[in-house]
Image (cartoon, rainbow over all chains, first blue to last red; front, side):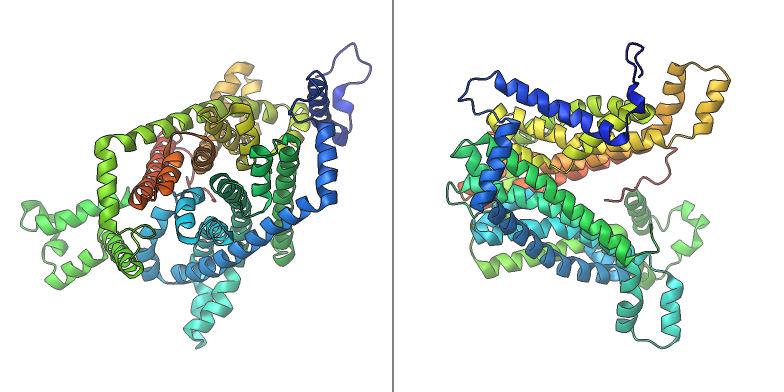
Length: 266
Length: 293
């Protein structure tokens, strides 16, 4: 790695400098490349992306679209949570339920959330309910699978101890099984929220693409409008970055919740 | 595997109680009809069959209740549509197009991600430079690349391949890096002491040691690519399974939509089954082939 002609070796650079080197070089190369293009080229350029970001933020469009998408994700996630966790506890704590429902769950699991979109449009039209369906469907499986896993792995001794002490079945589930399954459920929530955020972008994009200009809003729809109507690639890149940042924030939030709620696990 | 074996034993049970070989298993041969029925009732294949029967019955009930053939076609109509699509060859045509794109994308992603993963894991300096860039790009989902990809590649076959290769890249890379980093340092040191060449150390120690992790990465990559292709084809391609479901949705031919959706699930499931078999074959030494997701 070290080159004899340089007085400083690359290896001695501080880690932070190493981390930003490649991204900065790439952005510079990108900017340099766009400078060679004609003035009216639609190609996105870093400087234009920043300007576009400022303009979209100032007009409030970006924030409003992001909030709209986030709201849908949270609502869809809440639906998935209610269904996924309750069904997961049921399947995890009863072998009969698990054996009978497993084939159905396993045959739906390989069907991608986006494959459900045509049905969702047929049922609910191109508005928010269709998007919510996709999000809830996407988030449902990681929640369910991880809840089942967590519940079925609860220490049998604890369950037996509770039964010995004459605690009823429902209270055993609520007081012993559910708390013991929390780590697994939290992991499932994190995964579910990740796929839910991807799913909402896909759903809004596709709904926008398939319903013409009468899309239902949200950041995915905004991207499609930039693509199809205003041909604003800088705007698209702004949206992509926002999508990435939100995904990162969601992930960090859930990881923080895991360490906060489960301090005994590192 | 398990279900297959159990199916066989259940079959034996019902068919050959008078077989001479059954003498060796008197417990089974002398089972009372009640016990036999109980065993039959609990046999895995029967449970699966029963679950599907209940599901289809419920579906039928709902479709009768909704009584809108566009929103909820009956199972019979969907089955009909499925047979029609299969016999006309249209079904296999779309499956072939989609799986072809999938294969190309996976090959592209693997040829970039796996060597890069080895390079990053074995070279700490390179890792310090490349890893932050990977972590910057990773949160941007493949789906978010669709509008830009549409502009660059246009509507067609390249966009799905690009989106899938992007989506498959990250799990492959991260799992390769993990696998290579997890190599027992003592093995490498021992080989080095014994004068094994760098190349041989790589092919005989690093590659076999990292392979289980790479295979796990490959399975995750496949699963996410298969989910992404539907979105990519639905939005920006004139062919493939993702295109087909949306095309027939617009024509309001719901039975075909349902048939194609079931095909998407079936193809995904069968591919994963194949990958699992490959995983067992290639890396029989790997402990536990289950993945967290």
